[in-house]
View 1 (cartoon, one colour):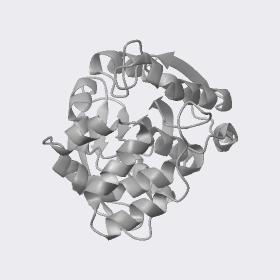
View 2 (cartoon, helix red, strand yellow):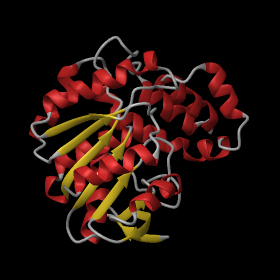
View 3 (cartoon, one colour):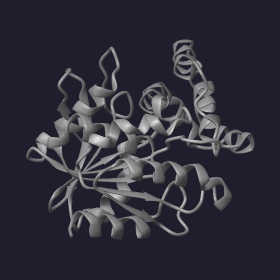
Length: 269
């Protein structure tokens, strides 16, 4: 583990591995750099990979008040460490954060790859409820981290039986530990999860060449994937320099065997 200091003084923990052009991995909700270790290892023969703990989780610190721009600065600090700019891959809510980084700090990102940014642009998935971010904040402030994790998990579409199983699994203590950062993911996604495709127009200025990917399954079922597909298609209609790719048979957590060749082909072409 290594540490850098972001612009606002927050310490950001990261792992560096491999050799080649720099590639920063931006994780989704509840994920830490250790969750990206397998992907980082698979990419290390081709890239110098930076896997980091987003602020407020894992071994990274934090600084108040929170703003999405602070997380963009964290990505920028890693790009500076890598020589001033880097390739970036974002997954899930991390894909939305990566898009914001390309919008707000375009000089830091050479190329951008995204996997299933969870935008909600139609009735194929319920929109983020009114007051959702405030609800998460209240639960965290009350020390009800488990309930915050349940609330977030239900919003993203996990069925009650699966959430109950998660509570009994070895992964649950980690989910409770990272629950405060769910407020950040909800804040990142809030304006693009209202069921209105017009909210995506802010990314029309993103000139970074972008690979936008999705799978064909959600929780193992093809019928549950519609909102991911619709969202990815809507983003593709907005971005000026985009390549659309679907990884057949992949769920919201794609396999390295499917993902790595797609990233190599795009970043190293």
